[in-house]
Amino acid sequence: MAIGARDFIDKLLVEKYAQEKVDNHDSEALVSRVSADDMLGAMAASANTYKTMLALNNRLTMVCYGVVAKSAKYVQTEAV
Image (tube, rainbow, N blue to C red; front, side, top):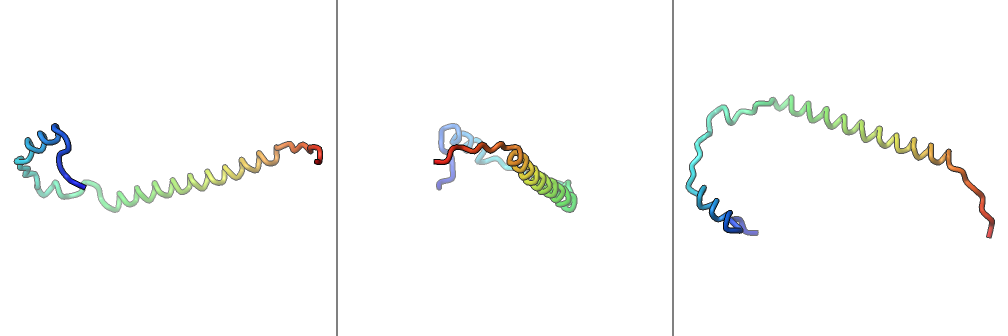
């Protein structure tokens, strides 16, 4: 798999920005604005919410199957 410009516009962009120099590495740019513990806590809360939703969805599905099965009217057909 080749890396590089594939069409004319990409080639022009590569030529335009090939010599650009960026110097924005100050000490504040490398420090996270969100604490890792807060992020992991939010991820855990989201995962627990999703897990609970899946369990409730599974239980609701089973209840609905039961209601449908109990309300079904079975009609005896002629024996062949």
